[in-house]
Length: 429
Image (cartoon, rainbow, N blue to C red; front, side, top):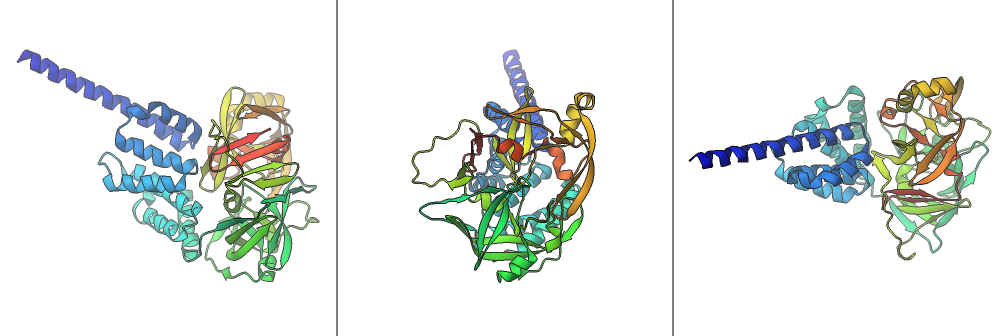
């Protein structure tokens, strides 16, 4: 009798210890998720996956597959998770699953399903979001509902799927885009969550305009009234896209410094990510095709996606940082999270200045620290930036999760850039 009692007590202790260990793992994963540190989150999950219950393995796998651009696989896992929906999984955790489901459907050009997922968040999970996120969800519902009947974006490659990127005197990459019967210059910008087009250019091209009753938050923080235009087809060199969505902005709102250089709009993340894999060398962007030979999958997955923003893992002074991968930024900048972490060093070594920065919606004045030479590395390849702006105060609320944006000064310091949204990798040579 005594031996049975001791065995039962031992069993209870073992179960309790296992539950405690899993609770610690879940707390760590939740903290990494809350800070948007998807790279550390992925490595921690892969190290401890066998120590988690099956339902939590599925939960974090569906999140990570979304963040590393495996949208369809993530949605399949979400469907499986929602069928079993364990009692231990709170509504707060499920709200994160529905949020990535929105992002997955958007990247798959499934706009009606994206709107339905936004509505589900509004109806059942709104209390788990702050006021800024709630506004984004409301706007997302309006945006994707307006596009519910638009067919999926589709890429068509010619026998020579490449085009030229020219650098203007501001440092922006420009591409010539064929719109209907005209060819117009656009900025090539991975940091733009949606492609943009001037209203005059959209009207000239005869694109159907969809009226929206919502503003878009501009770089300045001001609300910019906007509408949507649907391009049945655009062509960039040897690459074409069907059913491209553009935000339509008033001509004066596409306010890039040095207005003497004409720009008709911005080719943003949805089109660029639609290329799946490409390289840039000597100003030529070439899309990799399925018959281009066997491509070795990189060992490092250093490119994640936060909603419609590509995030690259960057190393600095033995530290790992998540930074926006932003070809539409002429220079690398660092946000408040970077300033707070290295404040003493920055204030003692660097010069404080006032600058004017501009983008869609106008320009603003900022107090920044100007850096000396900083050494950054991506996937083990080191580069340098200098005279970077370090912002001691928050520019936009969404930037609080990231250390900065990796801009053209870093990107073009190498001979070749390789980007794979299929394999979640950015590499420099």
